[in-house]
Length: 290
Image 1 (cartoon, rainbow, N blue to C red):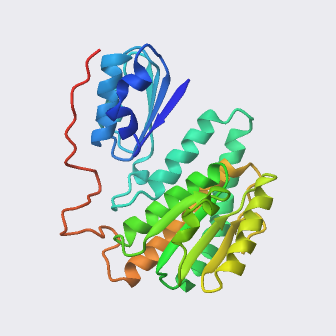
Image 2: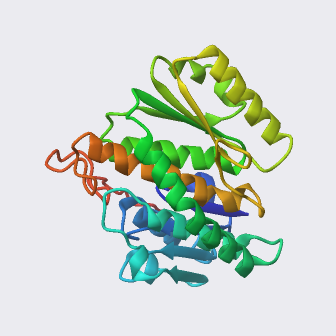
């Protein structure tokens, strides 16, 4: 069994016994700074409840808890210093950690070629996505939806827009099929809707059907498909998981453009507010005992 942690590591930190007692899972931890309270809390929980469990810590900071505390059966993958982006929101750090994990865990073979293919597609894609982002007006709100791995790309996309616009552009994410079950009520007026289209079938058909339905039901909304055969085409020859970093890049660009348009400090939209910071603060960790 494997457990992956990162910004959502609080799930394990809050209930460590539910995941670690009597178990020896592989725990994969992701951290840009590698020093967040949740990252440290995960390591503390492992030390107390599963000290011999294998660990893989993927971090952008070579001088961090994740880099140093690998346990008895662990390894740390420390990414190049250039990935340790200094802005409030994770951008290159997120995509590089994701690609690193795919390169480690993709069992279908050809991983070096897949990394190279993603990089090649990104070089072609970024100017197009930048042009599209610069032309996109700031909406009242935005929705990202997708299927399979792209549903979680939608989650990261929504988070990025909310972070860099300082919460001024409310953002929602869901799966393409799940969106109809209530979350669709979020759409009103000038809502931007980004459907991340899958290279897989029948997921691609469900994505296309949803985009058509939303255009018919919400004529004032701006529906854009992003992915294979999309309004903004993104090639995904190696599958949706390898395509996820590419589609997330569009949300990152939108977030930067809209943050600047709103007059915010793109590198720190919450400067002077004391509410959010680059590395989460104010979390009190409670001891874990076996």
